[in-house]
Image (spheres, rainbow, N blue to C red):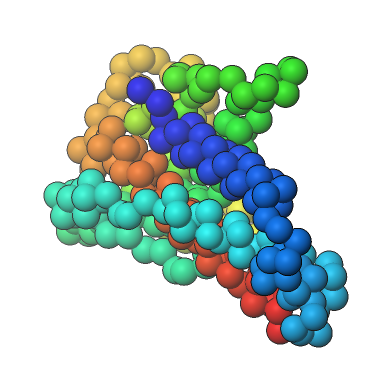
Length: 259
């Protein structure tokens, strides 16, 4: 099965290619008398104070927004079902890259952080991989998947565990486990907290630990919902949300250029 990111990249590339081909055919077939009615960059420039470069950018942005809205996917039922069943809540502010999943259980709070940018960067890689050396598009690599960085923090009154991991192939791959005396050190994104974390001994690379220790840590996290279901949710949610944020970003750029 094609990964979500590879499939989505293919749809984007194909849609853009069809759009370009359609525009070229229209330019050849359309009579000269009708061209003045199309909203070209020149027409945009004439109807406003935009420069030629500004008008060209606005037209390009409008086309990109149109394409993205055509391929925009609705939120999957998987998302709402997972949140209902798992007890986790999504914390995400519009226009921000960082997404947090949080669940409280007695005196313990579990935080899971991941970035929408990872979906974007991995889509770019997937699109590059589609191009052969001769410039021809090749078939998708069905084994390609999108690694998404994740940070898990198990917060307790006595201290916290910060786990650096990646979401890959619907599973969490743990890299390091860092115990801290305060949740502030583990969670905050300030320069001070980052400096404090760098001073702490973060232990061996997870894969080099004794297998029994690895298994015990993985079970510890699984009992807190850090499992394949959450990994699948993160990929699903990040893909849909990133597309929404991208459209919003395009519209904001267009607004600034036009005004």
